[in-house]
Image 1 (cartoon, each protein chain N blue to C red):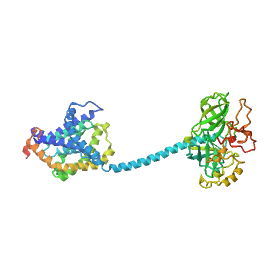
Image 2: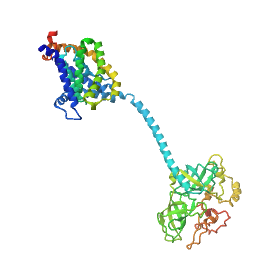
Image 3: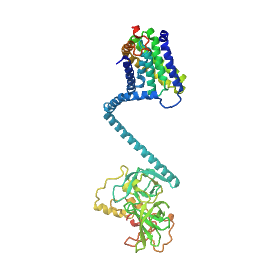
Image 4: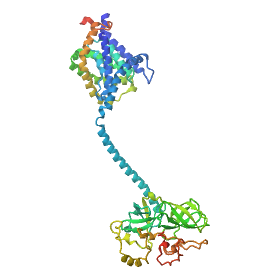
Length: 378
Length: 177
């Protein structure tokens, strides 16, 4: 019996244990509480395993934190360079997206207007603190002539002061030489916006009995013939109620942010503005070298010839400033009926402003105006 | 220290070695040291004690893994019994045949694992595509790890058998020596 038991003990024991295991495996369905025996095994083996794994983990940490970091500096430099390139690329993409949005907005604005216009990019801003101008990348080759108004979807920018075949200089409406005939949208009161060489303009020649308030929107009246009627000029920022005088004064905040001007439109409407020879005759280079000081005889000869055509501009100032919209006639307390804008020549019909010491006679329509009458010279 | 305790100690050491190997080696070349232990328990001298130790090693593996409790026990016990069956025929007393046997059995063990899962735990079917890819590397690593351990196991098993540490289960005992 004992011999038979010994002979069959092994297979019997195997079958017994295997059956227990198979039943145990088959009996398990999903998660369940850990039994006593497994818990004991866990309690015995886990501390041992922890003792082994902790040093291994420390060793791996030393390896990954120190040994494996050899060469990381070089890789870091490479990655920094790559990051810089990607940031640069990203910036270009961002700029392209912004440009696209601007162009879409401008295209929408352009399609709303039936006036023929040429889009142009601003390529230069005036560096002088006294004058306010910019240069655009479209010129005479695109049909742009001096005197043409320049606008954006926000409002009036200024007008073309001179051209080369590939570029044009734009005198901004905040330039001291600039004059715009405007009216207040709310009350239809008329006045003149004058550049102040700063971020704001002045509103002049508004009759005292007119009602204007801060925030009133100013639109071009079209009276000067340079700008189409109804373009936004700006909003009244501050009203100065004088105790005396015929007119009110106010500060105007332009509708256009001239510091962030990237694209503009030039309205292709030819005006009778004498071209600036000094600027328009340039074939190469936008700005000519300053001419040598003229001899007194030459000046004396040139002066009578130039006088009938145009007023002598200020030294250093571009002559196309004459193309700015002429200042309106100063209105008496009882305003006379305004002439039709289309019938008034742009720069001939308006008399000199009242600030002129000499009383200005209204010039004939055909006559070339004097400088104050054009509103281009302060 | 008795030879039985030494065997238990070796089994524990192999278990911890497998834990370390899992931490350090890629999955494709991790040796199955518990299976080596279970196979070695079927060598001459293991007897019933070896079978119990093999089942016990599988049980520990069951507890420490997410497998259904008893699955690895069944496989380890089967491995032990298979070694006992093929011990004389394959001459597993030399390192070469022993290593080849272990390598082949690793693959066979996976087949048995699949069969056991199908039979007893159909919900716990493994990712066989991944296992097949890992099989050659694991078999080779296990065979290489098993070869140097053969002499240690043989010595301890013979000591265990001669000590008759578990007389009821000793099959050969001092009589066979």
